[in-house]
Image (cartoon, rainbow, N blue to C red):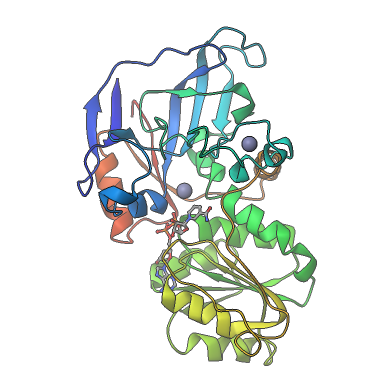
Length: 346
Ligand code: NAD
Ligand code: ZN
Ligand code: ZN
């Protein structure tokens, strides 16, 4: 089968031919219908060899959807032909975090060498993929896999971030979204669907700001050194009640810190190396700063329930497996509108 692999540190991903895997006991084989392209892959592929925590080659793709085509011994909770999406942050299933569905925070994943598909285990950018356990599958029903596969990460990650700030996002409040890319353009829609907050979106690109307005942002601003002042003006001096930074680079975490109002939340989702210093006088009184990772299994079920209600529409660009390297190039050059999705067999 064809697979898109990161093969050597510092090189671009390649399309290669590898054997179709067979499901072992407890595992599920999916024929992949769609795989999303996340900016985190670009970050991972920029790490030096000593920082890469898994062996290469690695089949990429941590946003996956597919149809069940084979099951290993003992699997009886999914059926052949089921359309599913993959919950990506695999954990042990048994520790106290996993017991709460928070496999993204599994306490034993590292010790047991459990890694997400596409981020250590073979991922979804291939014709077929193995899922380690049927509990990591969520029914897709009749939702379109191509338009909805990004919700497994570009939906779940902002959903988790927003959910923890819901008590602050009452009517009259303001949410600032920094970065209107894959995660950000879904985050804006989630904020509109889940809260009464006014949404101000920031990006460095006018095209991304146009997308932000299209998906529901009330105000859009170029992310520059005037952005903080403009946010203060737009909020009557009060500042934001929640800031979601989907870039997470030093210039955006600085904006986040400065535009956050009293008793606000600052959530750093982007992994661009930025940080917010917390201390008396560095942030507004009682600002909570956090950096979450992905989301829980039950939250992913909630995200798909929202999608079924028609509350989130992911804007996608589609590519074949052969075109995947081009999709990564476009993402790297900040040219993707919404999310790039690889569609095997297209
Ligand atoms: P993306 O490339 O689709 O979107 C990033 C957006 O940020 C783009 O629209 C870009 O124009 C914008 N941007 C870049 N610099 C900016 C700046 N200075 N000010 C404002 N906007 C700026 O990427 P994505 O796939 O949506 O991922 C976003 C970030 O989130 C990445 O860092 C990714 O690695 C990270 N991520 C984190 C988690 C997590 O669990 N914490 C999960 C998924 C992705
Ligand atoms: Zn991701
Ligand atoms: Zn666990």
